[in-house]
Amino acid sequence: MDILKPIDLGIAGDGVVYRNLPVPELVMMALERGEGVLSDTGALSVETGKYTGRSPKDKFIVDTPAVHDEIAWGKVNVPISREKFELIKGKMLAYLQNLELFVFDGFAGADPKYTRSFRIVNELASQNLFIHQLLIRPSEEDLENYKPDYTIYVAPGFKCIPEIDGVHSEAAIIIDYEAHEVIIAGSQYAGEIKKSVFSVMNYELPKAGILSMHCSANIGEKGDTAVFFGLSGTGKTTLSASPDRSLIGDDEHGWTDEGVFNIEGGCYAKCIGLKKEAEPEIFGAVKFGALLENVILDENGHPDYDDGSLTENTRAGYPIEHIPSAAIPGVGGLPKTVIFLTADAFGVLPPISRLDKDAAMYHFVSGYTSKLAGTERGIKEPVTTFSTLFGEPFFPLNASVYANMLGKKLDETGAQVFLVNTGWCGGKAGSVPRMKLKFTRAMVKAAIAGELNDVEYDRDPIFNLNIPKSCPDVPAEILDPRNLWEDKAAYEESAHALAKAFRENFEKKYPDMPENIKAAGPQA
Image (cartoon, rainbow, N blue to C red; front, side, top):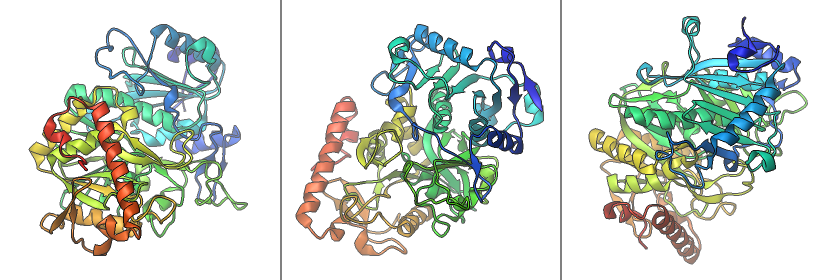
Protein backbone atom coordinates (compact mmCIF):
# COMPACT_ATOMS: atom_id res chain seq x y z
CA MET A 1 0.00 0.00 0.00
CA ASP A 2 1.45 3.35 -1.09
CA ILE A 3 0.75 6.07 1.49
CA LEU A 4 1.49 9.75 0.90
CA LYS A 5 1.58 12.54 3.42
CA PRO A 6 -0.99 15.33 3.25
CA ILE A 7 1.82 17.84 2.81
CA ASP A 8 2.66 16.09 -0.49
CA LEU A 9 -0.71 17.34 -1.73
CA GLY A 10 -0.39 20.84 -0.33
CA ILE A 11 -2.66 19.92 2.58
CA ALA A 12 -1.85 20.46 6.25
CA GLY A 13 -2.77 18.07 9.04
CA ASP A 14 -2.10 14.47 9.96
CA GLY A 15 -4.64 12.63 7.82
CA VAL A 16 -3.78 9.43 5.97
CA VAL A 17 -3.47 9.57 2.19
CA TYR A 18 -3.90 6.30 0.27
CA ARG A 19 -2.33 6.31 -3.18
CA ASN A 20 -3.55 4.10 -6.04
CA LEU A 21 -5.24 1.51 -3.87
CA PRO A 22 -6.19 -1.71 -5.69
CA VAL A 23 -9.83 -1.99 -6.69
CA PRO A 24 -10.74 -4.58 -3.99
CA GLU A 25 -9.38 -2.32 -1.25
CA LEU A 26 -11.23 0.73 -2.59
CA VAL A 27 -14.47 -1.24 -2.69
CA MET A 28 -13.90 -2.58 0.83
CA MET A 29 -13.15 0.87 2.25
CA ALA A 30 -16.16 2.41 0.51
CA LEU A 31 -18.36 -0.26 2.09
CA GLU A 32 -16.78 0.17 5.53
CA ARG A 33 -17.29 3.94 5.33
CA GLY A 34 -20.95 3.54 4.38
CA GLU A 35 -20.58 5.13 0.97
CA GLY A 36 -22.51 2.40 -0.83
CA VAL A 37 -23.56 -1.24 -1.02
CA LEU A 38 -22.76 -4.13 -3.31
CA SER A 39 -25.28 -5.15 -5.93
CA ASP A 40 -25.79 -8.82 -6.70
CA THR A 41 -23.62 -8.29 -9.80
CA GLY A 42 -20.68 -7.28 -7.60
CA ALA A 43 -20.78 -3.60 -8.57
CA LEU A 44 -20.53 -0.91 -5.87
CA SER A 45 -23.83 1.00 -5.83
CA VAL A 46 -23.98 4.58 -4.51
CA GLU A 47 -26.44 7.45 -4.40
CA THR A 48 -25.08 10.90 -5.22
CA GLY A 49 -27.63 12.97 -3.30
CA LYS A 50 -28.73 16.35 -4.56
CA TYR A 51 -26.52 16.30 -7.63
CA THR A 52 -27.49 13.43 -9.94
CA GLY A 53 -26.07 15.03 -13.08
CA ARG A 54 -23.59 17.64 -14.14
CA SER A 55 -24.22 21.17 -12.92
CA PRO A 56 -23.09 23.41 -15.81
CA LYS A 57 -24.15 26.64 -14.11
CA ASP A 58 -21.62 25.91 -11.37
CA LYS A 59 -18.63 25.57 -13.72
CA PHE A 60 -15.99 28.31 -13.99
CA ILE A 61 -12.59 28.99 -15.58
CA VAL A 62 -9.99 31.11 -13.79
CA ASP A 63 -9.45 34.24 -15.88
CA THR A 64 -5.76 35.16 -15.97
CA PRO A 65 -3.72 37.17 -18.49
CA ALA A 66 -1.98 33.99 -19.65
CA VAL A 67 -5.23 32.38 -20.88
CA HIS A 68 -7.64 35.29 -21.28
CA ASP A 69 -7.30 35.65 -25.06
CA GLU A 70 -7.53 31.89 -25.66
CA ILE A 71 -10.83 31.13 -23.94
CA ALA A 72 -14.21 31.51 -25.66
CA TRP A 73 -15.86 33.34 -22.77
CA GLY A 74 -19.64 33.34 -22.50
CA LYS A 75 -22.49 31.45 -20.87
CA VAL A 76 -20.53 28.18 -20.99
CA ASN A 77 -16.99 29.31 -20.21
CA VAL A 78 -17.67 31.63 -17.27
CA PRO A 79 -14.75 33.58 -15.77
CA ILE A 80 -13.84 33.69 -12.10
CA SER A 81 -10.95 35.62 -10.58
CA ARG A 82 -7.76 34.01 -9.34
CA GLU A 83 -8.46 35.56 -5.93
CA LYS A 84 -11.84 33.83 -5.57
CA PHE A 85 -10.37 30.55 -6.82
CA GLU A 86 -7.61 30.69 -4.22
CA LEU A 87 -10.14 31.58 -1.49
CA ILE A 88 -12.32 28.55 -2.27
CA LYS A 89 -9.34 26.26 -2.76
CA GLY A 90 -7.81 27.35 0.56
CA LYS A 91 -11.01 26.62 2.44
CA MET A 92 -11.41 23.28 0.65
CA LEU A 93 -7.88 22.16 1.54
CA ALA A 94 -8.50 23.20 5.13
CA TYR A 95 -11.64 21.08 5.09
CA LEU A 96 -9.66 18.10 3.79
CA GLN A 97 -6.91 18.23 6.42
CA ASN A 98 -7.00 15.38 8.95
CA LEU A 99 -9.37 13.37 6.73
CA GLU A 100 -8.63 10.02 5.13
CA LEU A 101 -7.89 10.87 1.51
CA PHE A 102 -7.62 8.78 -1.63
CA VAL A 103 -5.27 9.65 -4.48
CA PHE A 104 -5.29 8.22 -7.96
CA ASP A 105 -2.31 9.02 -10.16
CA GLY A 106 -3.15 8.11 -13.72
CA PHE A 107 -3.15 9.21 -17.33
CA ALA A 108 -5.37 10.57 -20.08
CA GLY A 109 -4.52 9.83 -23.71
CA ALA A 110 -3.77 6.31 -24.96
CA ASP A 111 -1.28 7.57 -27.57
CA PRO A 112 1.94 8.01 -25.54
CA LYS A 113 2.96 10.99 -27.68
CA TYR A 114 0.00 12.96 -26.33
CA THR A 115 -0.54 11.52 -22.84
CA ARG A 116 -1.13 13.87 -19.90
CA SER A 117 -0.84 12.82 -16.25
CA PHE A 118 -3.57 13.62 -13.72
CA ARG A 119 -3.53 13.39 -9.93
CA ILE A 120 -7.03 13.07 -8.47
CA VAL A 121 -7.44 13.73 -4.73
CA ASN A 122 -10.71 12.34 -3.39
CA GLU A 123 -12.59 12.63 -0.12
CA LEU A 124 -14.58 9.50 -1.01
CA ALA A 125 -13.21 6.03 -1.72
CA SER A 126 -16.12 5.39 -4.12
CA GLN A 127 -15.23 8.39 -6.26
CA ASN A 128 -11.59 7.30 -6.26
CA LEU A 129 -12.75 3.90 -7.50
CA PHE A 130 -14.64 5.64 -10.28
CA ILE A 131 -11.72 7.68 -11.57
CA HIS A 132 -9.36 4.71 -11.11
CA GLN A 133 -11.57 2.86 -13.59
CA LEU A 134 -12.24 5.78 -15.94
CA LEU A 135 -8.68 6.97 -16.53
CA ILE A 136 -5.73 5.03 -17.89
CA ARG A 137 -4.19 3.03 -15.08
CA PRO A 138 -0.40 3.30 -14.54
CA SER A 139 2.08 0.49 -14.04
CA GLU A 140 4.20 0.29 -10.88
CA GLU A 141 7.11 1.56 -12.94
CA ASP A 142 5.03 4.55 -14.08
CA LEU A 143 4.36 5.47 -10.45
CA GLU A 144 8.01 5.49 -9.39
CA ASN A 145 8.77 8.81 -11.08
CA TYR A 146 5.23 10.06 -11.50
CA LYS A 147 4.70 13.82 -11.80
CA PRO A 148 1.19 15.14 -12.42
CA ASP A 149 0.55 17.61 -15.21
CA TYR A 150 -2.74 18.56 -13.50
CA THR A 151 -4.13 18.05 -9.99
CA ILE A 152 -7.87 17.77 -9.31
CA TYR A 153 -9.20 18.14 -5.74
CA VAL A 154 -12.66 16.64 -5.18
CA ALA A 155 -14.57 17.29 -1.93
CA PRO A 156 -18.34 16.67 -2.08
CA GLY A 157 -18.62 17.42 1.63
CA PHE A 158 -17.23 20.93 1.25
CA LYS A 159 -20.02 23.38 0.52
CA CYS A 160 -19.39 26.80 -0.98
CA ILE A 161 -21.12 29.92 0.34
CA PRO A 162 -22.24 31.79 -2.79
CA GLU A 163 -22.48 35.19 -1.12
CA ILE A 164 -18.88 34.95 0.05
CA ASP A 165 -17.25 32.76 -2.58
CA GLY A 166 -18.67 34.46 -5.66
CA VAL A 167 -20.23 31.31 -7.10
CA HIS A 168 -23.83 30.33 -7.81
CA SER A 169 -24.50 27.57 -5.29
CA GLU A 170 -22.88 25.26 -2.76
CA ALA A 171 -21.23 23.44 -5.68
CA ALA A 172 -18.37 24.72 -7.80
CA ILE A 173 -16.28 23.18 -10.56
CA ILE A 174 -13.35 25.49 -11.30
CA ILE A 175 -10.47 24.95 -13.74
CA ASP A 176 -7.25 26.95 -13.52
CA TYR A 177 -5.49 26.24 -16.80
CA GLU A 178 -2.49 28.37 -15.89
CA ALA A 179 -1.91 26.73 -12.48
CA HIS A 180 -2.87 23.28 -13.82
CA GLU A 181 -5.39 22.75 -11.02
CA VAL A 182 -9.08 21.89 -10.76
CA ILE A 183 -11.37 21.97 -7.73
CA ILE A 184 -14.74 20.23 -7.51
CA ALA A 185 -16.76 21.19 -4.45
CA GLY A 186 -20.19 20.21 -3.20
CA SER A 187 -21.14 17.56 -5.78
CA GLN A 188 -20.81 13.78 -5.45
CA TYR A 189 -21.73 13.19 -9.09
CA ALA A 190 -18.63 11.46 -10.45
CA GLY A 191 -19.19 12.71 -13.98
CA GLU A 192 -17.86 16.10 -12.89
CA ILE A 193 -14.39 14.57 -12.41
CA LYS A 194 -14.43 12.81 -15.76
CA LYS A 195 -15.58 15.88 -17.65
CA SER A 196 -13.05 18.11 -15.89
CA VAL A 197 -10.28 15.88 -17.24
CA PHE A 198 -11.90 16.11 -20.68
CA SER A 199 -12.10 19.91 -20.48
CA VAL A 200 -8.39 20.02 -19.71
CA MET A 201 -7.56 17.75 -22.65
CA ASN A 202 -9.72 19.91 -24.93
CA TYR A 203 -7.44 22.80 -24.00
CA GLU A 204 -4.17 20.88 -24.23
CA LEU A 205 -4.58 18.70 -27.33
CA PRO A 206 -5.35 21.40 -29.94
CA LYS A 207 -2.11 23.11 -28.91
CA ALA A 208 -0.36 19.93 -30.07
CA GLY A 209 -2.29 19.94 -33.36
CA ILE A 210 -4.72 17.24 -32.24
CA LEU A 211 -8.49 17.40 -32.74
CA SER A 212 -10.11 16.49 -29.42
CA MET A 213 -13.61 15.08 -29.79
CA HIS A 214 -16.68 14.25 -27.72
CA CYS A 215 -17.22 10.95 -29.46
CA SER A 216 -17.04 7.19 -29.15
CA ALA A 217 -14.97 5.10 -31.56
CA ASN A 218 -14.69 1.50 -32.66
CA ILE A 219 -12.72 -0.49 -35.20
CA GLY A 220 -13.51 -3.46 -37.44
CA GLU A 221 -11.49 -6.54 -38.25
CA LYS A 222 -10.08 -4.84 -41.36
CA GLY A 223 -8.93 -1.81 -39.37
CA ASP A 224 -11.83 0.40 -40.46
CA THR A 225 -12.31 2.99 -37.73
CA ALA A 226 -15.60 4.80 -37.09
CA VAL A 227 -16.29 7.69 -34.72
CA PHE A 228 -19.64 8.62 -33.18
CA PHE A 229 -20.24 12.21 -32.05
CA GLY A 230 -23.12 13.01 -29.75
CA LEU A 231 -24.28 14.45 -26.48
CA SER A 232 -25.11 12.32 -23.47
CA GLY A 233 -28.12 10.10 -24.10
CA THR A 234 -27.83 10.02 -27.90
CA GLY A 235 -26.28 6.56 -28.05
CA LYS A 236 -22.48 6.96 -28.26
CA THR A 237 -21.80 4.25 -25.71
CA THR A 238 -24.58 1.93 -26.88
CA LEU A 239 -23.83 2.07 -30.61
CA SER A 240 -20.06 1.84 -30.31
CA ALA A 241 -20.20 -1.24 -28.03
CA SER A 242 -20.83 -3.72 -30.82
CA PRO A 243 -19.89 -7.41 -30.60
CA ASP A 244 -18.64 -7.48 -34.20
CA ARG A 245 -16.30 -4.49 -33.73
CA SER A 246 -13.65 -3.62 -31.15
CA LEU A 247 -14.39 -0.67 -28.86
CA ILE A 248 -11.65 1.96 -28.83
CA GLY A 249 -13.55 4.15 -26.36
CA ASP A 250 -17.05 5.34 -25.56
CA ASP A 251 -16.83 9.10 -25.06
CA GLU A 252 -13.58 11.04 -25.56
CA HIS A 253 -10.93 10.81 -28.30
CA GLY A 254 -8.14 12.59 -30.10
CA TRP A 255 -7.66 12.53 -33.89
CA THR A 256 -4.04 12.69 -35.05
CA ASP A 257 -2.43 12.43 -38.48
CA GLU A 258 -2.04 8.68 -37.84
CA GLY A 259 -5.45 7.83 -36.38
CA VAL A 260 -7.56 8.17 -33.24
CA PHE A 261 -6.84 7.41 -29.60
CA ASN A 262 -9.00 7.06 -26.52
CA ILE A 263 -8.49 9.77 -23.92
CA GLU A 264 -9.85 7.49 -21.19
CA GLY A 265 -9.37 4.00 -19.82
CA GLY A 266 -12.99 3.30 -18.97
CA CYS A 267 -16.65 3.88 -19.85
CA TYR A 268 -19.49 5.81 -18.22
CA ALA A 269 -22.74 4.38 -19.55
CA LYS A 270 -26.32 5.50 -18.97
CA CYS A 271 -28.26 2.65 -17.37
CA ILE A 272 -31.87 3.69 -17.56
CA GLY A 273 -33.77 0.94 -19.38
CA LEU A 274 -30.64 -1.20 -19.72
CA LYS A 275 -31.49 -4.71 -20.91
CA LYS A 276 -29.24 -7.67 -21.55
CA GLU A 277 -30.96 -8.50 -24.83
CA ALA A 278 -30.44 -5.03 -26.32
CA GLU A 279 -27.06 -4.07 -24.84
CA PRO A 280 -25.30 -7.27 -23.71
CA GLU A 281 -21.81 -5.74 -23.59
CA ILE A 282 -22.80 -2.92 -21.25
CA PHE A 283 -25.08 -5.17 -19.19
CA GLY A 284 -22.22 -7.60 -18.62
CA ALA A 285 -19.79 -4.81 -17.73
CA VAL A 286 -21.70 -4.00 -14.52
CA LYS A 287 -19.77 -6.41 -12.31
CA PHE A 288 -17.18 -6.23 -9.54
CA GLY A 289 -15.04 -3.14 -10.02
CA ALA A 290 -17.85 -1.14 -11.60
CA LEU A 291 -19.56 1.79 -9.87
CA LEU A 292 -23.32 2.24 -10.14
CA GLU A 293 -24.73 5.71 -9.53
CA ASN A 294 -28.35 6.22 -8.45
CA VAL A 295 -29.52 2.82 -9.68
CA ILE A 296 -32.27 1.41 -7.46
CA LEU A 297 -31.56 -2.08 -6.08
CA ASP A 298 -34.38 -4.44 -5.16
CA GLU A 299 -34.54 -6.37 -1.87
CA ASN A 300 -32.13 -8.95 -3.29
CA GLY A 301 -29.60 -6.35 -4.36
CA HIS A 302 -30.48 -6.69 -8.04
CA PRO A 303 -30.32 -3.47 -10.11
CA ASP A 304 -33.69 -2.26 -11.37
CA TYR A 305 -32.59 -0.42 -14.48
CA ASP A 306 -36.15 0.64 -15.27
CA ASP A 307 -36.50 2.59 -12.02
CA GLY A 308 -35.74 6.25 -12.56
CA SER A 309 -37.13 7.46 -9.24
CA LEU A 310 -33.83 9.02 -8.19
CA THR A 311 -32.97 10.26 -11.69
CA GLU A 312 -33.28 9.23 -15.33
CA ASN A 313 -29.51 9.76 -15.47
CA THR A 314 -28.57 6.47 -13.80
CA ARG A 315 -24.96 5.55 -14.58
CA ALA A 316 -22.36 2.80 -14.55
CA GLY A 317 -18.63 3.48 -14.57
CA TYR A 318 -16.31 0.60 -15.41
CA PRO A 319 -12.88 -0.09 -16.96
CA ILE A 320 -12.90 -0.63 -20.70
CA GLU A 321 -11.56 -4.13 -20.10
CA HIS A 322 -15.06 -5.04 -18.89
CA ILE A 323 -16.13 -4.86 -22.55
CA PRO A 324 -15.04 -8.17 -24.14
CA SER A 325 -14.46 -6.58 -27.55
CA ALA A 326 -12.39 -3.65 -26.26
CA ALA A 327 -9.33 -2.61 -28.26
CA ILE A 328 -6.38 -2.49 -25.84
CA PRO A 329 -4.60 -0.08 -25.96
CA GLY A 330 -7.29 2.31 -27.15
CA VAL A 331 -5.90 3.34 -30.52
CA GLY A 332 -7.16 2.95 -34.07
CA GLY A 333 -6.44 4.05 -37.61
CA LEU A 334 -7.80 7.05 -39.48
CA PRO A 335 -11.63 7.12 -39.46
CA LYS A 336 -13.44 6.09 -42.62
CA THR A 337 -16.90 6.86 -41.20
CA VAL A 338 -18.04 9.77 -39.05
CA ILE A 339 -21.48 9.63 -37.46
CA PHE A 340 -23.26 12.53 -35.77
CA LEU A 341 -25.88 11.29 -33.31
CA THR A 342 -28.93 13.29 -32.32
CA ALA A 343 -32.04 12.43 -30.33
CA ASP A 344 -34.72 14.51 -32.03
CA ALA A 345 -37.74 15.00 -29.78
CA PHE A 346 -39.63 16.80 -32.57
CA GLY A 347 -39.78 13.48 -34.42
CA VAL A 348 -39.00 15.02 -37.82
CA LEU A 349 -35.33 14.39 -38.58
CA PRO A 350 -34.72 11.31 -40.75
CA PRO A 351 -33.31 8.23 -39.02
CA ILE A 352 -30.19 8.53 -41.18
CA SER A 353 -28.95 11.01 -43.78
CA ARG A 354 -25.64 11.53 -45.56
CA LEU A 355 -23.75 14.83 -45.25
CA ASP A 356 -21.24 16.39 -47.61
CA LYS A 357 -18.35 18.36 -46.11
CA ASP A 358 -20.27 21.67 -45.87
CA ALA A 359 -23.27 19.98 -44.25
CA ALA A 360 -20.93 18.12 -41.91
CA MET A 361 -19.38 21.40 -40.79
CA TYR A 362 -22.85 22.92 -40.34
CA HIS A 363 -24.11 20.10 -38.13
CA PHE A 364 -20.81 19.83 -36.23
CA VAL A 365 -20.96 23.41 -35.03
CA SER A 366 -24.75 23.25 -34.56
CA GLY A 367 -24.62 20.10 -32.41
CA TYR A 368 -28.39 19.63 -32.25
CA THR A 369 -30.11 17.19 -29.96
CA SER A 370 -32.94 17.10 -27.48
CA LYS A 371 -31.27 17.07 -24.09
CA LEU A 372 -32.73 14.09 -22.27
CA ALA A 373 -34.14 13.97 -18.76
CA GLY A 374 -31.62 13.76 -15.93
CA THR A 375 -28.44 14.46 -17.88
CA GLU A 376 -28.17 17.83 -16.16
CA ARG A 377 -29.81 19.16 -13.03
CA GLY A 378 -33.33 20.45 -13.67
CA ILE A 379 -33.92 18.60 -16.97
CA LYS A 380 -37.24 16.78 -16.52
CA GLU A 381 -38.25 16.29 -20.17
CA PRO A 382 -36.53 16.62 -23.57
CA VAL A 383 -35.27 20.14 -24.28
CA THR A 384 -34.18 21.39 -27.71
CA THR A 385 -30.44 21.96 -27.45
CA PHE A 386 -27.75 23.21 -29.79
CA SER A 387 -24.44 22.24 -28.23
CA THR A 388 -21.46 23.33 -30.31
CA LEU A 389 -19.25 20.39 -31.37
CA PHE A 390 -21.75 18.00 -29.73
CA GLY A 391 -20.19 18.88 -26.37
CA GLU A 392 -20.12 22.67 -25.88
CA PRO A 393 -19.73 22.59 -22.06
CA PHE A 394 -16.34 20.88 -22.36
CA PHE A 395 -14.58 22.94 -25.05
CA PRO A 396 -12.80 26.05 -23.75
CA LEU A 397 -11.40 27.37 -27.05
CA ASN A 398 -13.27 29.07 -29.87
CA ALA A 399 -15.44 26.62 -31.79
CA SER A 400 -13.66 27.50 -35.05
CA VAL A 401 -10.44 25.95 -33.70
CA TYR A 402 -12.05 22.51 -33.49
CA ALA A 403 -14.33 22.94 -36.52
CA ASN A 404 -11.49 23.90 -38.86
CA MET A 405 -9.52 20.89 -37.66
CA LEU A 406 -12.44 18.58 -38.46
CA GLY A 407 -12.82 20.08 -41.93
CA LYS A 408 -9.14 19.46 -42.60
CA LYS A 409 -9.43 15.87 -41.37
CA LEU A 410 -12.38 15.20 -43.68
CA ASP A 411 -10.44 16.58 -46.64
CA GLU A 412 -7.40 14.48 -45.82
CA THR A 413 -9.22 11.19 -45.19
CA GLY A 414 -12.31 11.37 -47.41
CA ALA A 415 -14.34 9.99 -44.50
CA GLN A 416 -18.09 9.59 -45.12
CA VAL A 417 -20.30 11.56 -42.70
CA PHE A 418 -23.83 10.62 -41.62
CA LEU A 419 -26.40 12.26 -39.33
CA VAL A 420 -28.28 9.58 -37.35
CA ASN A 421 -31.44 10.33 -35.38
CA THR A 422 -31.65 7.96 -32.40
CA GLY A 423 -34.65 9.83 -30.99
CA TRP A 424 -38.22 9.87 -32.24
CA CYS A 425 -39.65 9.61 -35.73
CA GLY A 426 -43.29 9.82 -36.76
CA GLY A 427 -44.43 11.99 -33.87
CA LYS A 428 -43.12 14.06 -30.99
CA ALA A 429 -41.49 12.47 -27.96
CA GLY A 430 -44.17 11.02 -25.72
CA SER A 431 -46.63 10.43 -28.56
CA VAL A 432 -44.68 7.65 -30.31
CA PRO A 433 -41.98 5.21 -29.18
CA ARG A 434 -38.33 6.04 -29.62
CA MET A 435 -36.60 4.67 -32.74
CA LYS A 436 -35.98 0.94 -32.34
CA LEU A 437 -32.37 0.24 -31.45
CA LYS A 438 -32.21 -2.71 -33.87
CA PHE A 439 -33.00 -0.38 -36.79
CA THR A 440 -30.47 2.23 -35.67
CA ARG A 441 -27.83 -0.49 -35.33
CA ALA A 442 -28.64 -1.72 -38.85
CA MET A 443 -28.32 1.78 -40.30
CA VAL A 444 -25.01 2.40 -38.54
CA LYS A 445 -23.71 -0.98 -39.66
CA ALA A 446 -24.65 -0.22 -43.27
CA ALA A 447 -23.01 3.21 -43.14
CA ILE A 448 -19.74 1.79 -41.78
CA ALA A 449 -19.75 -1.06 -44.33
CA GLY A 450 -20.13 1.41 -47.21
CA GLU A 451 -23.52 -0.02 -48.13
CA LEU A 452 -25.10 3.44 -48.28
CA ASN A 453 -22.51 4.97 -50.57
CA ASP A 454 -24.14 3.96 -53.87
CA VAL A 455 -27.87 3.76 -53.05
CA GLU A 456 -30.41 6.28 -54.32
CA TYR A 457 -31.11 9.33 -52.17
CA ASP A 458 -34.01 11.76 -51.84
CA ARG A 459 -33.52 15.39 -50.88
CA ASP A 460 -35.37 16.60 -47.78
CA PRO A 461 -36.60 20.09 -48.80
CA ILE A 462 -36.95 21.38 -45.23
CA PHE A 463 -33.72 20.17 -43.65
CA ASN A 464 -31.60 20.11 -46.81
CA LEU A 465 -30.59 16.52 -46.09
CA ASN A 466 -29.93 13.49 -48.32
CA ILE A 467 -32.12 10.56 -47.22
CA PRO A 468 -31.33 7.05 -48.53
CA LYS A 469 -34.23 5.31 -50.25
CA SER A 470 -33.11 1.94 -48.92
CA CYS A 471 -30.96 0.44 -46.20
CA PRO A 472 -30.25 -3.24 -45.48
CA ASP A 473 -32.43 -4.71 -42.70
CA VAL A 474 -34.45 -1.50 -42.30
CA PRO A 475 -38.04 -1.04 -43.59
CA ALA A 476 -37.87 1.51 -46.40
CA GLU A 477 -40.99 3.32 -45.18
CA ILE A 478 -39.33 4.48 -41.94
CA LEU A 479 -36.37 6.18 -43.66
CA ASP A 480 -38.45 9.28 -44.48
CA PRO A 481 -40.20 10.62 -41.37
CA ARG A 482 -43.06 12.05 -43.43
CA ASN A 483 -44.24 8.51 -44.05
CA LEU A 484 -44.68 7.84 -40.33
CA TRP A 485 -46.73 10.92 -39.43
CA GLU A 486 -50.47 10.29 -39.68
CA ASP A 487 -51.13 14.02 -39.48
CA LYS A 488 -49.11 15.51 -42.36
CA ALA A 489 -49.99 19.07 -41.39
CA ALA A 490 -48.65 18.42 -37.89
CA TYR A 491 -45.45 17.07 -39.45
CA GLU A 492 -45.00 20.21 -41.53
CA GLU A 493 -45.59 22.43 -38.51
CA SER A 494 -43.15 20.49 -36.33
CA ALA A 495 -40.49 20.25 -39.06
CA HIS A 496 -40.61 23.96 -39.89
CA ALA A 497 -40.39 24.81 -36.18
CA LEU A 498 -37.20 22.80 -35.82
CA ALA A 499 -35.74 24.18 -39.06
CA LYS A 500 -36.39 27.69 -37.76
CA ALA A 501 -34.63 26.83 -34.50
CA PHE A 502 -31.61 25.62 -36.50
CA ARG A 503 -31.46 28.87 -38.48
CA GLU A 504 -31.88 31.12 -35.46
CA ASN A 505 -29.19 29.30 -33.53
CA PHE A 506 -26.75 29.46 -36.44
CA GLU A 507 -27.37 33.14 -37.14
CA LYS A 508 -26.92 34.00 -33.48
CA LYS A 509 -23.81 31.95 -32.74
CA TYR A 510 -21.99 31.85 -36.07
CA PRO A 511 -22.68 35.10 -37.99
CA ASP A 512 -19.21 35.01 -39.57
CA MET A 513 -19.36 31.42 -40.78
CA PRO A 514 -18.67 31.07 -44.54
CA GLU A 515 -21.76 31.25 -46.74
CA ASN A 516 -21.25 27.75 -48.19
CA ILE A 517 -21.51 26.22 -44.72
CA LYS A 518 -24.52 28.34 -43.75
CA ALA A 519 -26.27 27.31 -46.98
CA ALA A 520 -25.81 23.62 -46.12
CA GLY A 521 -28.31 23.82 -43.25
CA PRO A 522 -32.12 23.97 -43.20
CA GLN A 523 -33.40 26.60 -45.63
CA ALA A 524 -37.21 26.22 -45.59
